Length: 281
Image 1 (cartoon, helix red, strand yellow):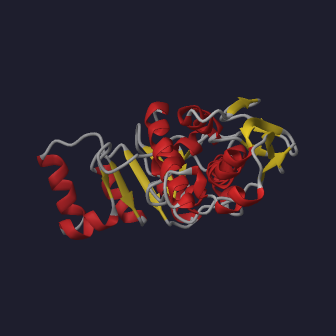
Image 2 (cartoon, rainbow, N blue to C red):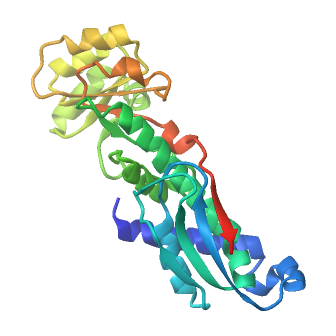
């Protein structure tokens, strides 16, 4: 994921979310702060309440600077850094009312991306004594895919496809609609397709496509014993990816397999929440 693309997306997300919070673009629409807070300058700190892999603070720095409203941000860490509990991440200094307007928008964004990068990191740590590469998936929250995939990178995963446009990936529904594995094989050969991923959900499918010359096979929702059986098939230069319901509690049973990739959807669908606060000094 290119940083420039993620940054542009982040700016749009933060702008829209702030507008949602205010009901417009006017900072004066924070009716509570307008009533109870006097005009004064304060200093506040983003603080990690627990150990996290930080993600999103670089975007926040750029966004605050783009507002040009007098708030000064100073970073103590950058995206991808490991932050211990109770460590200050960054400081904000400026008008109290403006900082309070930004508080929830910035915290929601920072906590969500850091949740993804932190969850990804802890999964990646379980793979550190293997040659298996952790992949993310397209199972992302609508509108957030670009920044979520940036966050998985910061946690140590490799981006799988960003979208439908950047890789030929033949899945089970493609096979069904095309009329079965023989028809898929004929299409691949007729159109001279060489670089593709094929999803298989049983031993017979996997063996068929290995013999047909496939070089990248995704083994989806298979039991360990069936995966082991497939890995015994004689083949050269075939990459194997395992996917389907893999999580923190069951990933251990896949670590001894001679596979190349494990793809995990829950790191973007439902990562373990992180706790980051904004402390006013």
